[in-house]
Length: 318
Image (tube, rainbow, N blue to C red; front, side, top):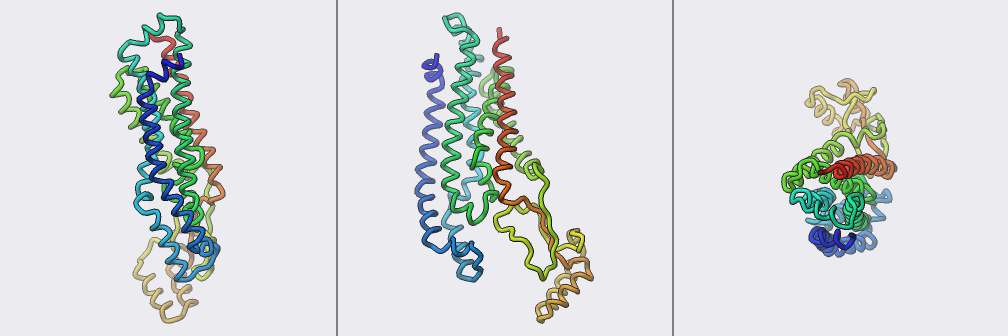
């Protein structure tokens, strides 16, 4: 039965392996280059708190070393969804073609056929997602030290969340497929549903997993170090932390006062307009693994429920 499952899913497995190999061929040399520049280019010295024009140039050059690959990474967050949906397709194809009936008339029981086929898909999906997570966690290592682990879409490709994503995509593909029993529409609908759910979590829900931190400080004060944190909002505010919403021409006038060397007068000028402070709301970088655990549990739990529904529906298929 395992051999049969492999033969029926070998095309998807081969494509997934080829994709992972191609990504490794692209990102391993780039990761080695970044790590070398980080170690020998003075980047660690600069992020230790040394602020000067030379360090600013060093950090800018380090960011540019990631080159075009860094701009491609956001699109790669779709890969777990593509893998999960693709690995669900062979089972849906069996349902569409009706070949599952032949298998059930042989020595293999219905329960064993369902358990083996779904388990094989789960193992392959988790293996592929795990390899991607290891690859990108390693590649992003030096970048994370400079820009933080919440930077851009790095959160979506590192740690354990890719495992949750791929299980969710696989569950969507199976659940929609066993109901619809048409492979192409089910694959498209599953992937679109996966993207919609990811956008909702990335754009709205994730930042609300845990209540964020906030602070308000005078414009002449140093304020908290938010370099590696996920800043949700920041800007000029009043003493109570309400962001400034008045006339920015007044702020420019206060800025001209500061340009003349009167920083104290500048603060008083801003305060008169309700804008003598800075306010920020953020999620600290130290919560990275807490957020990884919450999001992984959310997607993996939903995925396992969908897979269980698909198995239940298959057991009662005619």
